[in-house]
Structure formats: C-alpha cells, structure tokens
Image (tube, rainbow, N blue to C red; front, side, top):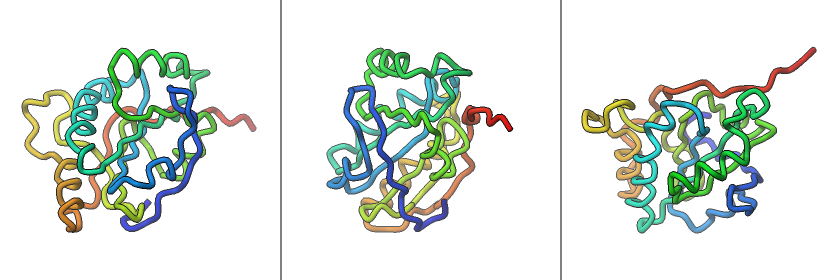
Length: 178
C-alpha cells in the first residue's frame, strides 16, 4: 500500500467471538491496523507499547486492531484458541482478529509482525511501518514513529513520515502446493 491508498475492507472473527470489518470502526478519527501473532519476539516486546498507545489515544477517537495472518497449521502457537488465551493473558484493549485465509495480509501488503498501517478518518493510509526505533529496549527509544504520526494526524497535519521499514518476524505464509 502507498500513502493515500484506501484501507482494504475485511470481515474477520475476533477472539471475543464478534466479527469485525472496517465499518466496525466507522466512528473512529483514525484506525491503526497492525499485523501480529503470538510467537514472534518482536510482537511480544511491542505488545505493552501497543496496549499503552491504544489507551493513550482512545479518548481522541483512535482505534487499534491486531490481525494474525500466520499459518496456524505450521505455527500452532498462532492458532485461534491460543490467540484467545494470549489476548486475555496480556489484557488486549483492542480487537485481535484471525485472517485464516491470509487474504487481508495480502490486500494490505503486510510483510512482518508487527507491521502497522495508520489510516485517517477517510480511511486513507497516512503512515505504515514500525512503531519506534528500538524494539528491544523501550527506555532507549529516541524516535516514536507511530506516536508522531498519530499526533500529526490528529492535529490535522500530514504525518512527518509516511513510511518506515517494518521490522519483526515475517508473516508465516501457507505453503501453496503445485
């Protein structure tokens, strides 16, 4: 996806038993869709920061949603049952959705976990990439890419950066047999 592209719609089951689409967040001033999973060390390191970001920006009308597109047959830790457990254990304050077909990850052009996409009120891509510049040591972060993009967007400005390179584990694609 490129800056300004419309968010691809989806219909995905959440760990809470509900089905979510972009329309589920129609009243949000901004939406952060991020591709996630249960087993990636990058995701595990970033989860507390993502929970904090959702808490910090909820009152400003920002909605986060995590999507797990990994092949659960090859990576059983990423099964729906384990997604439900992880969301409860970690206290997710955003929907955690399963993209079993992997069609949503393909539509977004997601490559890593975590890989995030920030959309404005019209659901146009405003920022994509990584959360900040130090996945291992939150106390050593010097550039808060997502927070800066959210602040700019909510102030009515174009984000100072439209894209950074997403880091993390690659999405675990299903093997396509010939």
